[in-house]
Structures are given as structure tokens and as C-alpha cells.
Length: 470
Image (cartoon, rainbow, N blue to C red; front, top):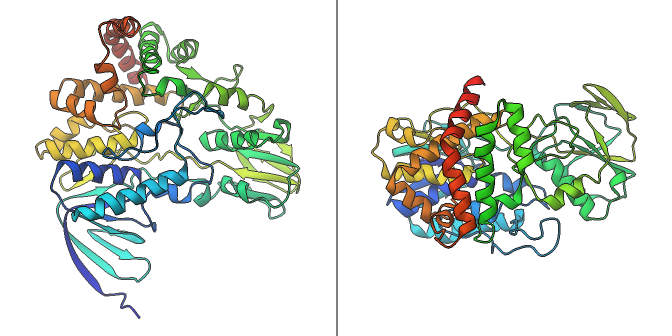
């Protein structure tokens, strides 16, 4: 029997807590740009963080070019020719993402000789962690920094405890359970209006479930981004540039935040499910126009607030109730994937807390933070000047606060030649190299860039003014 009190002493330049997407992206960039040694501690049995428990049909909702680690491509970036995402870049599946991270660890990190990996271990603070399997305790002497890559924890349905009561007499499951059904349900009730709820609805529709047999409980409607505007290819660059120009022009002209969002919608920056319902949520989710058309086929949408209790014959909500029965499958998609942990300075004397420094791109942010750690003088105030932390959005108005900081960071980076060069060459950045390579004969892109230049200053002033209001 292993002695639970047995200790081992280890030494590394960096102790990284978490082998999820952000921890892996940080370690990868540090491995490329420094000669530092690293110890990575994670509670799961393999790298990938929350992807280890994701539902079987999960995919990214952004192009694979924005995801993974800087050094290694994820997926093939081909254009889908069928399905609800057709015409746009392939979306990596959860299975392929898990395999990708295992390969990064086994074929890149560990063979380097500079990375030690400790799965199935719980970090206990103060440089100590313990093996879940053996109880053995490890103590690490950290030469440089401890890196917290778990501060923004991702919640997923499989490990989420609903904040409402559920009768034992009803069929209730997380979205993961849909692929394990034994009998045909009389009806499906999808609980949650966010990205997971969207995925559940689209999966059912894709598998020929009658939309009239789906009831969708949406406690808050959300603003969505049109995925067409996020495609980092030369062919789609015109959509990205026009989207950015429209954002700036809407900001310049808007006389209030509600007016801003309506201008966004008119210009195609934002999409919503129901034209008669004003969204009150923004999580940065993207959808294709085809997906939105499919979702609109579901007419049984319930907007009575959050679920309070599911009884054997009724579902009680904040503003009313609807009937149910034992033949209905209730699918929990209510976990909020975005963390709302308290923001803190990213760089401190002996620690780095990974948070977002560009709106909607936590993985890119982790890579960027590692680059700043590797190249900027070891003064937390200097490093934080390039890395102002961005809170995860929730309410619709959070878009203003998120993008005010995101644009501030981007402006700061654009004034630094070394950072601009790094962005140009980093695969997770997506667009810097495409914009920089716009040629003199590309008149359409040139015209849009002129619009951007004209509106940028007044738009930023208006955005900062709106942010101050909040």
C-alpha cells in the first residue's frame, strides 16, 4: 500500500495548473519562445480540460484556426459541403479535439524534455499537489511563476448540478444522454437558450425529429454572431472587414446602447432567434444562417423565465408553468459554460492568472499572455499594460464593456512592432496576416478599410462613453 504521506520534491521554472485549452496554449507558446521547464498538473486523466466530458456530438462553434495551440494546426480547415454549416469552414468535433490535445502532449510537450505532466492530480496550493490514484503528495520548487489556467472554469452539462428540483418520476438527463436513448420519447423539452441548448435542438432536427415534438425553454434570448463573418480565409475576408466596419459605423451613429444593438442587427453584425423578442443575453455564440433557419422551425418556445421545478405532470417556471408527463425527455442544457469568476490582474509577482485579453478568444489570449511573459521585462505593471483582463460576458450590455477593453488592448498591440509581427505569424490570431496582405488591386477590401479608418476614432470615443455609462 502506498504511503499517503510520502512526498516527492520537484523543481521547474513554471508550475501550470490545468491542462485544458488555455493551459495547453500557454505551455505551447512558452515551449516555443523560451528554454523554460514546466510542470503541468491536471485533475483529468488526459489533457483537454472540459472536452473530456463534453457531449458526443459537440463541435467548436468557431473555425478550428482559432483553437488549439499556436504551433500545430487543428483540423483541415476545409469548407463543409453539407449540413447546417455548409459553405463555411469545418468545425472540429470533440473527439478530434481530445485526440489533438493527446498528441500535443505525447508528441510535442513530453519529448521536449522540458515538460513534466501529472494527470489525475489535485492542486492544493503553495506549490503542492496530490495524486488522486495513489495519495502521493508532490511539492514543487517554482523558479519563476505559478500559472493558474483554471480561474475561468468551464461548466458543462455532464458535471453540472441543476439549480432547480426534479421529480424522480420524470425522465431527466444532461445533453450527453441524448445519444443513449433506449425508447422513443413522446416529446423533448430542451432547457436552456444558450449554445448547448442550440446544439441539442440542432442535433434533434438534423436527425429528423419533428420540430413540433420539441419544446424549447428559453429563459433569456441571446444575440448571436453570424459565423460567416468569422471565417479566416482570403475568400471570406470581405465579410470580416465589413462586419468590423459596420460595428464602428453603428457605434459612431448610435445614440444609446439599445439603439446600438438594433443598428448591429440591421447591418448583419448581430442575429436573433425571434424578431419580436429583444435579447437580454450575449455570450458571443456564433450561428450560421442555415442553423438559425432550422432553429426557427421550433415553434414551441417557452419564455417564462428560469425553471424552478420539474414535477411529474408540470414544469414550474418563474412566470408560469407548462404541462409535462413521464413520456417526455427533459434535457438539461442550463449550465452556463462561461465563468463569471472575479477578474484580477493577469500578472502578479509570482503568479500568472490566465484570463481573456481579446473578446471571445481565451485560447489565443493564453498564447498571447505566454508571449508577453517571454518577451517583456519582468515587471507586472509593464506586462499588465499589454494584457488588460476582459470579463466573460453575460448580459447583452456586457458586449460594450468587453469590446471597450478588447479594442483598447488591440490598439495597444498595434503600436508595438514586435507584437504586431507576432500577431501576423500566430495561427490563433486568425486575421492579422490576411488584413496586412490586402493588395492595392483589392478595391473592395480597400474601400472597407477606408470606412474603418474613417469611423475608428469617433466609434472608440462612443464605445468608451457607453462603457462609462455602465
